[in-house]
Image (cartoon, rainbow, N blue to C red; front, side, top):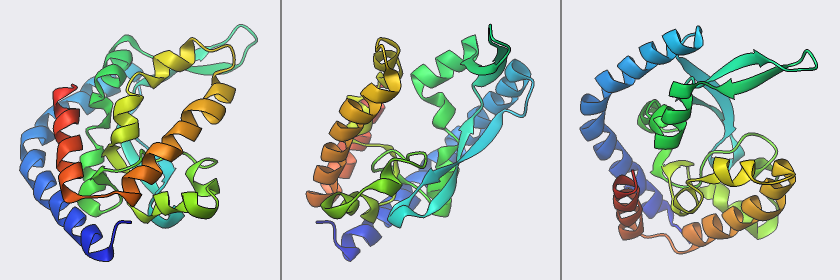
Length: 196
């Protein structure tokens, strides 16, 4: 299991990496926020509550990709714009999460931060997952990089997500925490970079 010393080294790696990449990516991020603002007619940066380390809630930052559209029954639905779909597919909508890493809410590598109703409801040995900060990338993130497309093909996407994908993600993330190594983080960062 990941130790306190390993958690400190992991945080040190995050700080070093974010200070290296932020100067390069800050201008593209600002440009994407401006493009998203024009594209969605709302401020292009949005925040949402997610479950973090030890189950503590934090605000995750993303580039806005969804707009409200009228549904046949008069309800509003959120749909991705054409640009938004591209940003989601390429994960460019997640660039503002570098700020989450900088302030210490997230790590470069770890389980993806969930909305309430998933990680915060973990029980028993599975709660080990909450020992680490959620990450921009990770083993489960790489495995399910096309998760949205997989869910679109299901008759009941929510049920499939809860009974198949989520269950598998818990196993993967539990294994990550139990077998953590500094080398593993470096490997996953490299894999994520090459998978773009």
